[in-house]
Every structure is written in structure tokens, then in C-alpha cells.
Image (tube, rainbow, N blue to C red):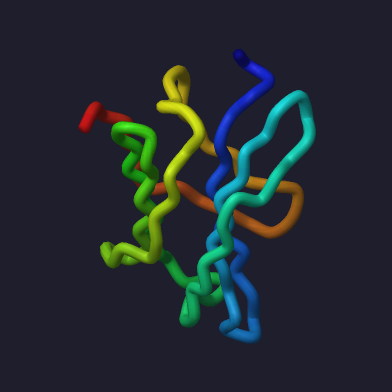
Length: 100
């Protein structure tokens, strides 16, 4: 349903202790499923972020390298989108959604 979705966040920090966070949001409540260290991501520096979802498993990539994977409780389906967040700046160069 439209009130339940998965969320992949890039928490970019000046300290270079950045992270990627995979969460499940249901009825406005967010549950963190996995946190992945992503050293080297810096504010103001472009980076690529990718999530491959297939057969109930999500693979998370940053800068083309697989950073981690997580098995989901179900095989998600439905719309995909971008959300900038509540703080900071963000620009998007390319956004692709395609079947695997």
C-alpha cells in the first residue's frame, strides 16, 4: 500500500564516517533494517547510489561497489521515487528504474 515502502538513505557527514541506511516505513513508522558504513562520502561531492531488488533480496551499491545486502520479508512491488530529506542540499543527475 502507499503508506508502506522501503527507504535507502545516504547519511553524509563531514567527519567521513558516513553511512547508508535501509529502512522499512509502515504507516509513518520507520524501522532500520540495516546500516552500512560508507567511509569517504563527503558533503558537496557527487556519488552514485543504487539498489537492486530481486526475489526478496536487496543489494546496495555506492560508487559502483556492492556495500551490502539484506533479505526482505516480502518481494516489494509498486512505485519507486526519490526523497531529498529534511536538511542539506541534493541534486539528481540521473534516475533510472528498470526490471532486473
